[in-house]
Length: 179
Image 1: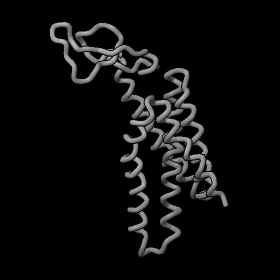
Image 2: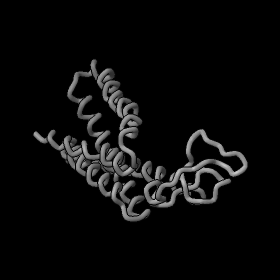
Image 3: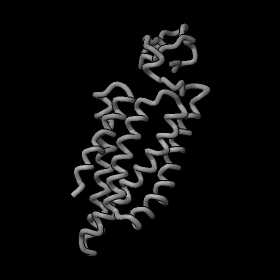
Image 4: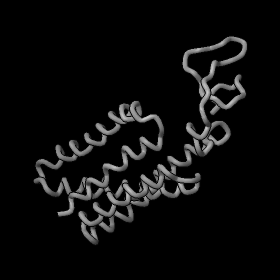
């Protein structure tokens, strides 16, 4: 991956070292290790596309799974969504090409929104009306906590596929909520 324009070889920029007239000092690594879908430089717009597709999945999931949760039951849709997040997350981690990656990111967004919405509604329906506000805030705190610990996970897991698996596989544990 080329991170500095003066150097024309496929390499990763070594932070903080500038060699002067030759350009940035670089360290060697395999391009496939860094970016298997070639989402740098000219193709960098594709990164934004993947995030937009994920957000479209959130939108689709809000409409479809929100309605389904009202129609078929919140717990059923919650469990289906947890299973869907787990499966799509594993497929995203091992996607063989960019189109498969994008399709399953969309589905991950659909099921991700299904888990969040149904969980939020189930929790706020369990408590009385006076406690709903505080319970809603506490539910959101767990999302924030996840965002806060994500850099720590990324520090110990060197590649994006491992991080994807580390944050996806625990969703299968929520299938134990079936009672």
